[in-house]
Length: 400
Image (cartoon, rainbow, N blue to C red; front, side, top):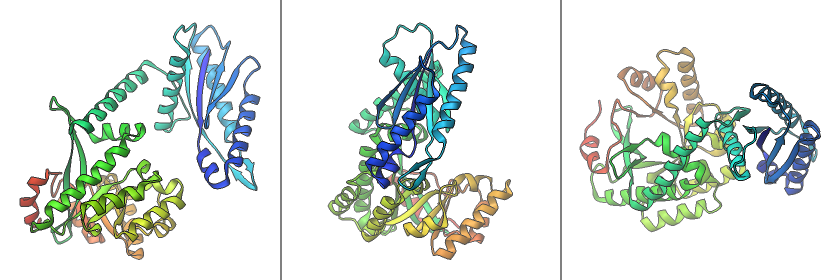
C-alpha cells in the first residue's frame, strides 16, 4: 500500500485575493479531481487547510511493481490537479507537491506513517520535485533538523547566537556600510553554518524570534557606535526573512525597536530576498513603502536568481539591489553570467537604484564590476565578517 500526502500551491493566494468562498470552491474541485483519479478501493481525505491524504491499496506483492504503479498514480493525480480551473471569472492553475510512504504490513501507529509521508512531501517541495518517496535517509535528515531546531531554541535563550559584521566598500576603497551576519557557536565550541540553521529556523518559525533579536542587537550596536569616529555614521544592513515580512505586526515591531533604541533609521538597510516578489506583492509593497516612510532603506538581496522584474523594482521602490554572489563568482568563466550582470547594472542605473556586488574575492572581479558601474562591494577580497570590537582598525584603513 502507499500513503500519499499532498498540499496545494496558491491556495492562500486564492483565499486572499478572491475570497474564502473561491478558496472553498477550489478545494471542492481539487477533491473531485482526486476522487475521479483514484480507484474505488482507495481512500481519500482532506486533513485540513490545503492538505490531502490518499491511501492507495492492493498495489502489488512486489515492492518494485508497487512503486511503479504508485508512480503512475502520482503522475495522473498531478496532471489532473494542474489542469486549468475556472474560478470566479478567473482561470486558476494550482500545483502540488507529494510525499509517498510505500509499505507492507506496517504495524507502527498511523500518526507515524502520516509523519513519514508528510516528511517526504516536505522534501519534495524543498527540492522542487513533483514527489518524493520516504526513505531512511529522509528520516536521518529530519533527525538532524530536529536536533538543530532544539539546539536553536536553547541557543536563543542561552546567548549562543551573536552578530558579526562584514564591511561594504565604495569604488574608492572606503568602508561605507556593514552587513550584520548571524553566527552560532555551541557550548562545545562548534560553529554551525548559517546555511544549515537558517532554513531550519525559517521552517520552524523560530526565525521570527531570532529576527527580532537581530534587529535589537544591530540597533544596540549603532547606539554604542554613536560617539565613535569612523563608526558613528556607519549604516548596517539587516536580512529580513520572508516569514518575518509576512507577519501582521511586522511594521509595529520594527517601529518599536527603532524608537526604543533611539537610533537614526537612515542608518538601517533592510535586505529582503528576491523571492518576496513572488508572493502577495500587494502586501509586500505596502510594508516596504511604510519602511521607507520611516526612512529605512530597502535592498533586494540575491538579485538575478529569477524572481525579480523591472516592474517589481518600480512597484517596490527599491533603494539598492545586491547582485547574487553566484554571478560574481563565475563571471570570468561564464559569458552569460557576465552579460547578466551588465544587464542588471544597466537596469538599475536607469531606475536610479544603487548596486552592491557581493562575493567579490579577487582584484579582477572588483575592477570589472567597478568599471561596469557597481556602487559598493562586499567579499573576502576586502574583509571577512568580524566581531564588533575588531572592526575599528579595519574600517580606518582605505582598501585601495
